[in-house]
Image (cartoon, one colour):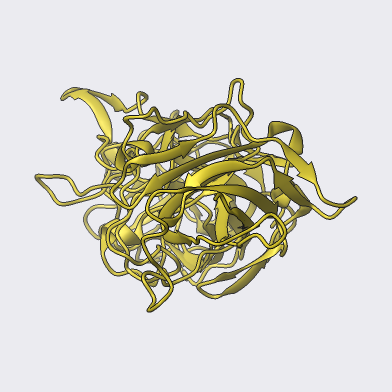
Length: 474
């Protein structure tokens, strides 16, 4: 006799359970010898919050919406990794009450016992992102199937307002119990979330603790660099624990072993096969501590393996934030490049920097010192002072300078786990101090190693949307 089973699918838009529940005593069993059970899924957002590594982060309505017209894709695997059930297209979803955001699916059949359920919402049968497994597809093969995304200047197609691609984040064994009936169905609770990640540079403090900088920073913008095109269908991790917060679980993304660059020296370029090099810049509004939490980026999961030779990670295969600010020098810190006379008017917003040699002194008798970087007016029409290194000249056009740092979780110690972006995680950063000028150019060398220190002070928090936040001094 066939029994009825009802599965409650809890849509946890911001969170993951830190420890996976596996094989609790008396909780899991082998089912009913292969007899099929009729199952109906109930899917709901239930709560707009998720428990994270440092608290909860509230989702927006646009991030929790379920599009019933797209139906629900359902794939169920046995403990040995073989396929038990695959929805032929999508299962129809019907809202159970007006405005409740709770939906039930049409029924389908699986054998009772310990199962791995993979479900996906907001992914239409035609033109969807998730590819259905075949009868011979193993669970491992299904998890590592590529989901190909499109990202137009930072507008990620799996993170569209009111239509986020939602699904099972990490495999977790669950019991499909026997004994349910049509009038008293069994319930299995599942958790799904966003297959995208969220990154937000929430605030910039334009002050600096560098006594050698007498000017001011302003007009901040930021963008994301190195965004993967492809992700795994579900998160691929080691061990029984589910990755959440700073629990040290190793995750291997689809591009984990992708190189930072293509070509061989001297012709080396960014790896455009696996990654988008940059998103568009977003503005930072206001002065001082500038809060712009609504200007978040959604991006794709990215982990990087260490280089086999150097053991390093690189900006070409590790996701990062790049900040553009305008630096306006104080007149007293500007030198004439021919005479080293200080207190010079710039006559515009562009300035230059140069490095000293010897132990120069200004005509006014001010000792500059050797190996010092100074700010100068336009050196193009003058003979450079002999105590300035010609090759050290840098032009900061319109005062623009650039700082960058890899997206990171400060609670992780291993570099592979520290400098990574995980699905359904929220990474929030505050720049608390600009310790020096940044680069004079916006282009980032993909072969540049990820440094252990930066020229910004950063505060970061990681929560389980997940959220990661940091304060950074640059």
